Amino acid sequence: MEILRVEGVNKSFGGLKALNNVNFSVQEGTVHAIIGPNGAGKSTFLNCMIGRLAPDTGTVMFGDISLTGMKPHEINQVGVSRVFQTPEIFGDLTLLENIMIPAFAKRDGDFALHPFRRVDHDAEIHDKALHMLEDVNLAEKKDMVASSLSRGDKRRLELAMCLSQDPKLLLLDEPTAGMSRADTNNTIDLLQRIGDRGITKVVIEHDMHVVFSLAEKVTVLAQGTIIAEGKPEDIKGDPRVQEAYLGG
Ligand code: ADP
Ligand code: MG
Image 1 (tube, protein in one colour):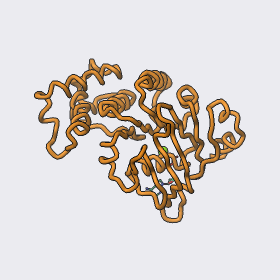
Image 2: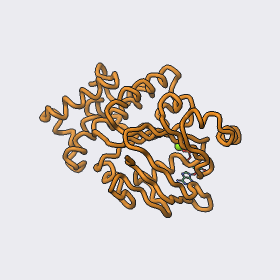
Image 3: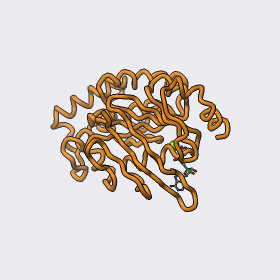
């Protein structure tokens, strides 16, 4: 069954056509990768799907729900979470608090009340946050301030923040960007482990190594256009893909 369907998305920045009539769909329960050289339009595409950018034309359907025109927090509320290329965490707060905030927002639907003030009073959210930190191997650091984490740990924290919202669809923009090989492998392991929960994942990647260990289907974007789509083993040898990477 299809969980996400994007049709006819175009997006220009001034004279630059960042996305050119992109059609894209994702099957429920799968890991679907979007790859392509730097500047291909991958992040722009993700931002169009999660309401950070408004496409010039086109529609985005999440199951029966039209995400077109919805605000990012509304899209989040219906079950779509995302990890950005640059981690978006609350640097001054502890790891535990960082996870409780999105968990509160998902459950209660309000940021306005500064939910972290209720931290000590909500055992359900507290326990959930702790469980999520265990999942990403950060439980020992739960009382540390988030800004003190290494880059790899920050990304793991951000992933735990997303998972605390029990998303149906998780979109990840280069989850291993800037990581050492060891951290990259840890992150791949982690993404494989959380794969069992039935969360559909769209992983945007520059690093093909990451994609081939994770994805069941790969879509290749180059200069704003989808140039190839298929199983990783077919994509690997596709001359159009090799050319796009070499030229990119
Ligand atoms: P990728 O994530 O594949 O590296 P991006 O989606 O970030 O690519 O960028 C696609 C193209 O759009 C690039 O040429 C980039 O410079 C341009 N671009 C992205 N965001 C903006 C913006 N806000 N304003 C102007 N140009 C942008
Ligand atoms: Mg990008």
